[in-house]
Image 1 (cartoon, rainbow, N blue to C red):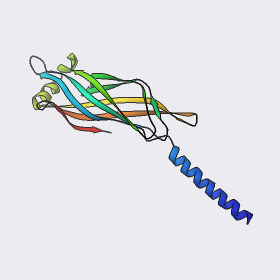
Image 2 (image 1 turned 30 degrees about the vertical axis):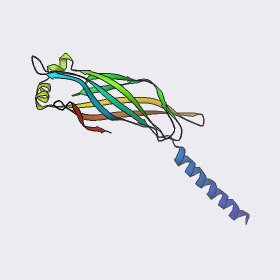
Image 3 (image 1 turned 90 degrees about the vertical axis):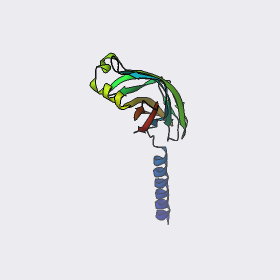
Image 4 (image 1 turned 135 degrees about the horizontal axis):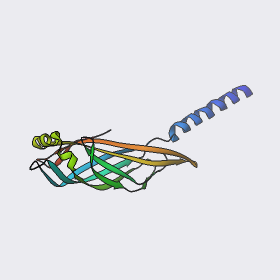
Length: 174
């Protein structure tokens, strides 16, 4: 009888430990652009191709952990053809357990002189569509029973800027 009770206790404890390990295992939070709006857009090809705009974006950080995620100050970059054309600061903060935090950012974007020499910029402006990317890395930690687990959440989003309608289309984050 003692053997069967001991075996049952071991099985029950193992099941509890397994469930506990699955539930509280720290996961990396997800970061993405929820929405992007175009403000103050100007572009042209004469005498050199260029574009300037302001983007108002909402960044969401989803924490699927059972404990809070605390992240440091970081920056978000907007890219056109791999070149940085704008940056915005993301202030440090916290996301509660199993919560989503939304932050509004404003990004001023302009084509630098080296970019205006690119042949593709002129043809992209003529086509009315600019393919852009956004990138950010959020470094922070998840504290579980006094144990600190560092986590890095990466946002990489692609979008098309429709010049004629002055809107963002095909916003996709991975």
